[in-house]
Length: 432
Image: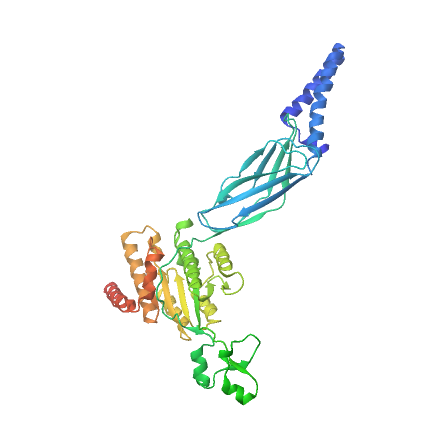
């Protein structure tokens, strides 16, 4: 009851004030009819407070998101289901779900009335143009009586999470360098070790195909032996994401770092669909194995929350990748690098790894004077040349570049020679 009295609206307080004034006037004037009016004016807000206060703690709420993981710029539908658990009908309910600023303004929905044990569902949509992990809720319910004399607020503590992942762009099919690098117990390896007449065998198991029986081993061991199933060659790839804050330029969804994150997501999903065993390494210290439980979902969830790191350096990134270096294909997405940092990246080419780097000229994300632009272009060309000389395949990226158009350059075996010659002339011209 106390909570209900505290929730009296301006109208309810006005009724009480009018009741007091009428009661005082009735006492002064000796009018019994005026006293009856005072009692009526006082009873109405008190009954409203009792009515609203009784139903205050008899509401249940459930929220669902469809889907709970969306790409940047896509919509998610939020469904709120409110149930009246009491035997008394509710008054008008105003629902307000709390949302972070990135998801837009707080939605407000009005439910006119919920009968005894009745449930009702309402829905609204949210949209985010910035990747991240957002809390949806808690839900605030404002309950009022039919006359608007009393209003109480209840907040449901439960929240749900909406994950906004980077935009994934389909990429064209390209014959990639190093696509057969990896590991596996292939038939070729088995034959190379044992020979055609001494294939790897195991004991016969019920249900094995009799055509796989290896009679020579069976005669030698005295037990029925069959050839082992061949394990396919496993292609491996590592996607390296540079998170150095000083290597990227621009702000918001159009920043160079956001281009890199979206490209990393697109490349990772493309390679996973192509059958690669994938690993994601970032300069912030993350090391995600997409072949484990979660697959693409775990990888995209991590990319949804990755941020620039003021302390990240190329040296630490190289060390982190080499901790589990097992050959295969390495695809790096780097911001602006110096010649010295480009030379450090040569350390990733160990153990037969094939390295492809998308090198962003992040200065093109800024408006620079002509002289500063020329200096930035010269520094970028020198870094590209240093990476080419260390054995990397390099794809230069400027502002406005589209990954599907750049992706075929990854598979061009001779692209490095022509680019190396052109860059050599560029660097030589800058030195003169």
